[in-house]
Length: 514
Image: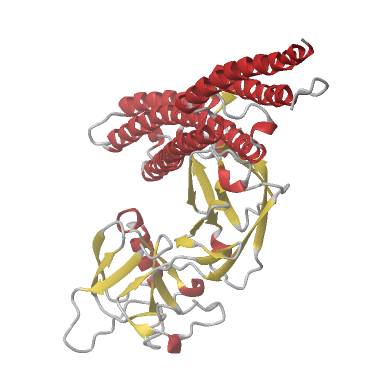
């Protein structure tokens, strides 16, 4: 049947040619862009997941850059701290040299003090000048700011890590559970009422503490206050000190370790004890008991005979977490809070005291180490000042002694300079400063190695896998697209030819008209 008003074969050929041309355009577009998805119509679901992956990729890429920069900041800080460490080591060597007063003249010690002063000034200068891109590193600007610290309860507070995400301040509450104790042995000054307050017979004792051992002999009838004087003259050697119970020779005396904690102990042993009739007897409280208030009279019925006693670390809760105790020091380390506290003696020995609370109000160095801005993907660290007025912090007679006190004309009228002959406390302060800087270096090194470097490797692996996933969804397969292009080209060419034939078919109707 022949018709001229409607050329159905031509319409069919046109429709197929249009489809083939669209297919040809699609293949040319994909091959020219290298992408399978160029617009939402290509693959709506694929476009959604691809864009999400692209967002993740950008976040991971920036996080890697952030971690690399954080690593550079920490490396720069650690390099400056290494110089501080070297200076502190040289200061300690000069103190040890000066302590040999029999081999060094006063002028030599004065020369050593000049070197110490210069080294201390250099440490403070490093604290003020260590920078990274204009960011001060060691002057305390990257340390946490604290508010409400009661120095009658907490002598020193150092915050290593604190999470302040979505909060203006973080409360730190300290609750003493069990008191810190020194090792303590007690001698009853009224064991023989006929001869109170004296040594009853000639006695040779061996006094041993964490620093060393000494032997002393006391004649019969020696007053106990003279025994106290003799023991205290050797405290720097033994680490043991003595005092009268309630200040009364008739009450007796107590031998105590100079420091608190389980690492401190006192041992007092009689070396010339007779086989019978030994009048020398020392006592201690049970190991786990709290020392009672003895101002109203000593409870001799509560003690047991002993010649050795060990101290006890303070036990405390910090924000409900059981802290690690070390003498008067407590520390807690968690993801949201890492803090080291030196408790005041009166607070640390009184478990009935009211809880002490202070606040972390800001500060610290915050590093974004992940693609998402959440607490789990942020790293916060406090870098305290290493100025001489902040290093050391040794508690002696209720006063904190810092590195600046070793310099001539030290701070707050406290001077521990070697040309004044005070070597023990000076050495302790420098050693504490060395430990403080070394621990800071170790903590920063641990962050760089265990947090930053591992995080970079993890994110690089994530970037690789995300890129592969996005490529599978979005990128064009050139082998497939090339074959489809060839097919589309053939069909388009064939469709054009067929449309021409379909149009020519209508003209054949003219032959019927003769």
